[in-house]
Length: 434
Image 1 (cartoon, rainbow, N blue to C red):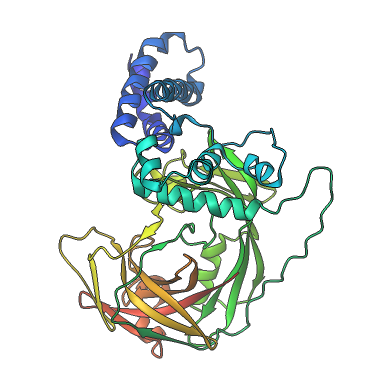
Image 2 (image 1 turned 90 degrees about the vertical axis):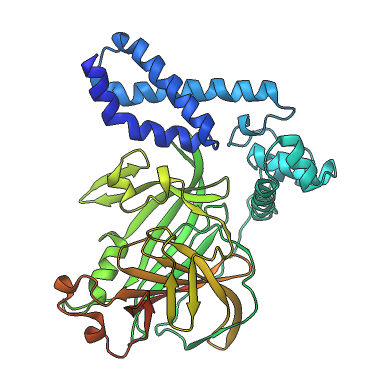
């Protein structure tokens, strides 16, 4: 069985990511994986095409997951996790019922238990045998999707809708950040990391990157959710990221590489994104390169994870944000304890962000190197879970050979902060408009 061991070693990570994306409980996922390995080993002699090993073993994993769901359904009063992600095609009589029928089954169940059966969130958690926090996040997502789908286009009727034009200013508006002594408020932020869009029907925004200290807009994107989508049996939504504008930058401009990296040299990307169990994640990314459409998915190992994957097994970014105490901030001085993760992310405080004369109550989420080593970001998120402003800082010695100098030399006018005594220099800002 030497061939089996070699083929399994090459496919193991992809199968693990697929199963763990389908089954939330880590212990349950491990049980399913063990059953998959055993079934694959026993059936391997019947596999004729060795080149088909990955789809073949994924088929076994899919059947083992289905067996697990059926077992859960027999043991639970309401089989929440066994319900399909996709909505039924049947529709009720009323506008509300028709809108409900357009939602995923999980959303319909949450809304009906709460509004029709008048159960509290605690009672729903007890009935479904899931944590109350999970009920809260699923209820919030179900309400948002219902609002996005209602009012909907009635059957057999053509409905015209004028969309508001979203534009970004050519120059970054003036802003001030006033830190508060009040504790940071908890926020549910369902945005996909780095692209600011929520993977939910009806979502749309424009965001852009602004050079500093010039404050000029160098590149702008429109993000639009196109509709339901599925990849490797996992349901999400398709999202188009289109470049609306890109400034011509000379080779000596430090922003040129940042702009090129943000788009990957492409005018358009198509993503499939997903919010599940309190995390948001990318499932796939697609672009056109020299006339060839190229697709990578979360099963494609480092080719996907290096650019789009976050967390263990692409678990993604948590949607519930509140201070954990791993990052401490006092003015421009940031400290991280020895017990913190190698690249911690934490809410560091509450502040009033006044942008172009408008005040926003926000929390500040700091990322110390998870997105990229040597980079620190400040993400100012409003009470409704939307990013207003995102700011990037580079460690003073980050990519010195590539850029030909330290950032304090390249951008001497820009703001500086320190992280455990190391200097970081403000590079650029991202502004979001919805």
